[in-house]
Structures are given as C-alpha cells and as structure tokens.
Image 1: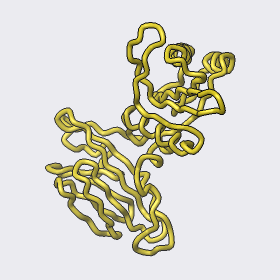
Image 2: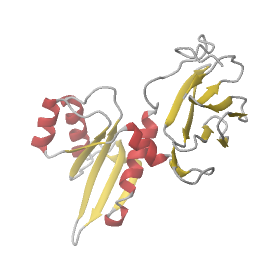
Image 3: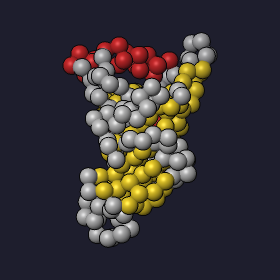
Length: 234
C-alpha cells in the first residue's frame, strides 16, 4: 500500500481533512448538551430548543438551556456552543448576551473549542458571562460510545478511539474513527458510513460492509476507500 503525502485517493471526488478530528457544529452542540447533562441532578437540561422572544414572541433557537429550581423561583441559564477555527470576538459575546436577554435567561455561558480574544474576554468578564473551553477531542469523548476501551487481545491496556478522518464523496461527508492498543498494537476500526465495527490484530486487514479496506501494520491503522488503489494512515 502506498500512502503518499495526501493519500492520493481519487482527488477529483474526495477531500480529506488532516491534522485534526473533523466534527460538524451539530455534533459539537450535541456534545455540549451531553456535557451539561451530567449536571441534571441540580436542574433540568434541555437541548436544541426554542424559547419565545420576550418582546416579539418569535421562537429563538437555544443550544442548551439549564433550569434550576430554587425555593421560590427558577433560574434559567442559556448555554451557547461555538465550534470555531479562530478565537471568538466581542461580537460573538454580545450576540449570546443579547440572545440570553431576549429569552429572559438569568445567565449565559459560552462553550467553545478556541477561546476568546482579549477584548472579548474583558467584555464577557464585565457582563458576568462564563466561558468554558471544550476541545474537539473532549467533545468526541463525550458523544462517542466506548471512546476508551480495554484491549480485547492483551487486556493490559486501553484502546483510545482518537484516530479520525473525514472525506467527501459526491458531496456527502463520511466520518470514520479508530484506535490502537499501545501494548500489543491491536486496532479497532469503526466506519461511520456503514457502522461496521471490528477488532484488527497486527498485520491483518478487513473489509467493512460498504467496501472500504481497513488494515493494521507496524506503522499504524490504515484505510483504503472503496474503489481506490491507494490509502493512508489514520
């Protein structure tokens, strides 16, 4: 198998995203909701809901809403998920603050993978807005079932499902993830296109239901797309 620098896999139809795990904003928003679901013992968590605007009555979309019931009152906390390539600026902070005011939330929290510019940080601090940094890797761990697994071969180490790749075919994006044991190098492949999930021992290869070839050698876990003659390491 020749991996090449960019995999060289049917370049006219496939786009590969390298250097980071690919995640859509909808998946990041879901991960933020799952993160705050852990706090449901001190309130009710609602994900991806609409709340009427206090002035116009029009529905406003809210990523996550956390309601805490006190003795004689209810506290509403608006949580906004922002998956970005660059740091958030003052405009982002002001927009979330305005949304929180529109739905009569008592407090606003921004959860982002990138952090804030210094002016945005000062703005958030002045208006009492909390900021939480939540990386893509942490988000993936939150929403992917069995992200950490005991190696089924040696049972002496964990397999971390942290090797990911996304690719585009005919305008559709497919996502695949995998991981490998640090001790015995047994790998697990998980094709998000067909759902095929399988353990691959060192120097073995398999084919998932949709026809992609997965292999595991001394250099790592590799993938060749269906119909391609060259692949790449995850």
